[in-house]
Amino acid sequence: MIISKEKPPEPLDFFIWTVEDVGLWLEEIKLGSYRQIFKENGVNGEYLEGMSMFTTEQILRFIRRCHMKWGDFITLCKELRRIKVACLKGEQRVRRPWWAPSCISIVFMKTAKRNRQCRVVSLKLEP
Image (cartoon, rainbow, N blue to C red; front, side, top):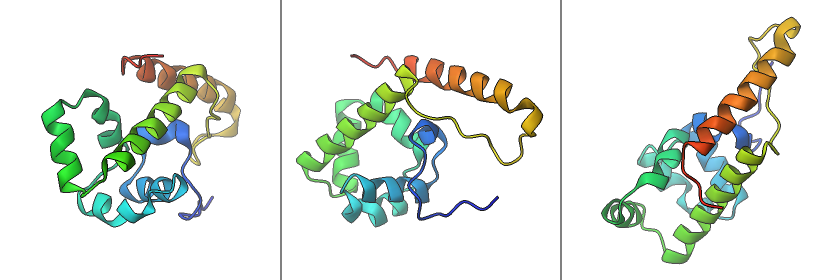
């Protein structure tokens, strides 16, 4: 199974997005002008997940390092929140990985969805 890299990444999988996936997502949310600088700074899904725990100083450093406008940073945070809420509510589809045999697909999908929802809850996301 070959997955096109130009297809936007699955939101539910944002914890495991690569730098390239983040770049595609930035294009999708109209922040594509930051794609290269995010890539140069190694911003992947794990990094995006950790942003919810940033201190004010870390946020300011990130904004300076990526040369972001405040409005764009707010847009980024809103879009991250939208994805996390969708994950929490279970609204995003879980993909079966290419390596998972079809005989365990249902079990895998249920477990993956539950684990990802638990991980989102652990982010202490305020409604």
